Structure formats: structure tokens, C-alpha cells
Length: 103
Image (cartoon, rainbow, N blue to C red):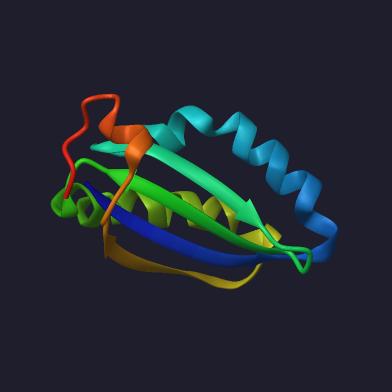
């Protein structure tokens, strides 16, 4: 299992719009090949962290053109450009119980 950690900041007056966009585009988000799950987190200042879990590193990296297209749609709601980091998953008990391979 491999992860992509994405961070971005939402414009203060665009949070409701972003939440609607996410709901309307959930199928497009999950259309990323190899994506098993994603978790969105937000702090009080509008910074968002998205942890996306993939089958493997290649799937995580190969998804980037798809992700850039999604980010382009989100651009009017964001401050700056999102950033992505790629990480090995050391442990994920909830996925291990579903039969997902562990890194």
C-alpha cells in the first residue's frame, strides 16, 4: 500500500462551495486507478490535508494527471497550488482486515 498526502488551502469564502464540489465529484475522485480510500482533513484555518491510499506506488504516481485535472477545477476555490507528497504506508490495520496487502 502506498499513500499520497495532498495539502492545500481553501479561500475563506469558498469552503461551502468546495464541500459541494467534492460531493458532486466523488465518482471522479474515486476514478483514480488503484485508489482504495481517501480521507479529507481540515484545520480551523482552512488548510486541507487529503490522505489517498493506493494499491502501490506506481498507481499513486500514475494518478497525477487525473489529480491535476481535478485540482484545475478546484483552482477558483483555492489559495495557491496544492502540493503532493508520496509516502510508504507503514501500518493500516483497518485495511489489513479487509485483505489489502501491507507495505
